[in-house]
Image: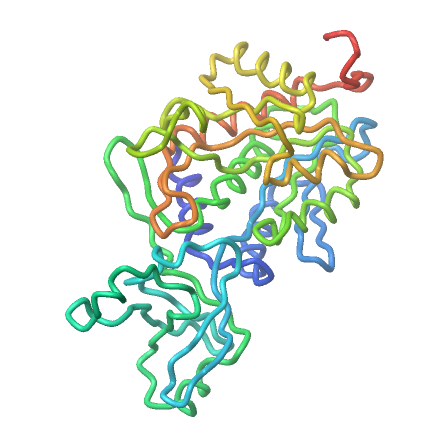
Length: 358
């Protein structure tokens, strides 16, 4: 990964974007696309969409969601402690002992989430897994008035947004889900455009609110009305202890992007992704899903009268935690794959499942 691309990834990972609070990261996306796209649009939902070669008859959409899981302040008690609700899917145990930031109107407010020290837990308390309602954020406030001088009910919070390099070009950070997918679609868009004239109208969408119901992909795809769409998200890497490969698949970091097969994916799109990977010597992995996936691909496929949809994913260890871990090489290869796929499309392709293969 070149230094400029890595810097952009780090800036995405360091910018807060809980579902419904995505505008800080969308400002980065707009700035990035401004130097590449023929036009950059937004909508009232918060999606940001760039397009190249907009007048071509075949419309292709690359979609990555910019939102991350987070927390929302629900209550401030008399002592200044903050009770929170989850935004998206959290395992409460993941939050105990976390450094967090509340993103108040006046700026970031540091805090911590902890629980009663082990020395003070009763035998029964030690056996109980804490629930979200049992956790609180301590910002060091003296009382409610002190807390309310910097925080309001409805402010969002995230765990500390920090990128942590590991060995073998692996990196850990919160919000790899799905800042890495967002990076992939933006970088694929740039690579496809800079490689020369396109034969399709290529759209790229930074979608919002995926973590609370795939909402931004639904609204942005309705507006674009694509013929073909690829969602890029993360998928569970299974190359760590305790995960059953028989039920979850054999997916490893550093072995390339993951191409999904199953009823949520158009078979011609899958075959074209495979052909692009083979032609450009891009390593990839297959994964299967026998149902609609819990990704933007789900709603992309059923937009309007239906869209020929694919799903390409980045392997991710420890999903929905503060230490989500990916291999940087998988991101680069995924961007190359999508750029090659987009550049290989031309008007007149029949993506109906029973149509003849190209």
